[in-house]
Amino acid sequence: MELLQLKYFLVVARLEHVTEAARSLHVTQSSLSKTIGRLEDDLGVHLFDRNGRNLRLNEFGSRFLRRAERALFELEQGKQELSDLSSPEPSTLELAVTTASTLPNILREFRKKRPNIQFHVQMLTTQEMITLLHRGEVDFCLSSPSIEADDIESQILFIDPILVAVPMGHRLADRSSVSLTELRDEWFVGVKRGYGTRDLVDSICKSVGFAPKYVYEGDEPARLGALVEAEIGIAFIPSTAKNSPDRIKFLQVENQELVREIALLWHKSRYISRAALDFREVVVDYFAAMSR
Image 1 (cartoon, rainbow, N blue to C red):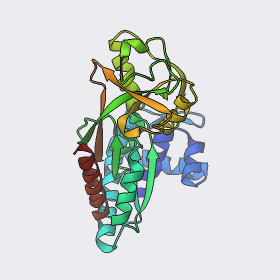
Image 2: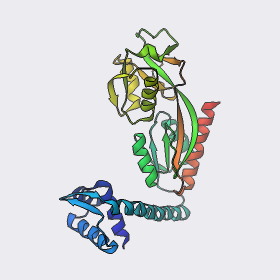
Image 3: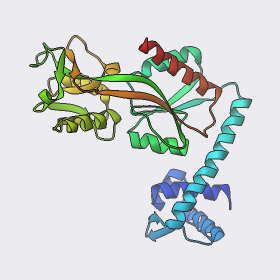
């Protein structure tokens, strides 16, 4: 069994399509198929059920995938640890976020401390983030909500109230607070299902007897303020993401504990570089200052 076979197997297992996997690996389909075939010969079983170019992991493949991911994960961690020991600084810090409102300030503070570190940041849904965490492919995730899992470490940083944002001409704009039941007939703008804040808000609204009616559902939380200003709809916006205070009125929610947890997440077995440790310190200090 060769390391190359395992790497190819992981890509094919995740994509379940020979053409797409070959394109991703920059190899020919013939070469890829032969490599997977040799791996199956070595193992003595077929790992996929085949239908033309489409593949589907069978039970043997699913079981072997977990072991292969773990083996390659440990090898990658060893490589990163040696790189950290032999080089002054790593080239890139891998980050994923489900909540991005505080990230620019955090990155600015970290850059003051580590000016030569580059970032690769992905804005993801909760499930996408969990997938990368399980694979150990990111140093840290800044997430709302926090995640509980055997291989994931979670540090809750901040309890963030969720507010109701309305345009200044709205019927509620002269109020400082509002009950959720008063919003039953309103139109909302929000992010898509799968983002932590959206799922939390929908659940709380359901508990008081209604489902918010969305006229806009997107992937960019930062756009919601502009849509509220334009009177497209009202929005649930966390306090840390407040913007345009002169053109939007933010209302407290009455009689409900509508808050989100912001947490820092990392894989328990992923090697944490010196730069990553410094990043974690900056994040913790940033939210500690907000809580004072």
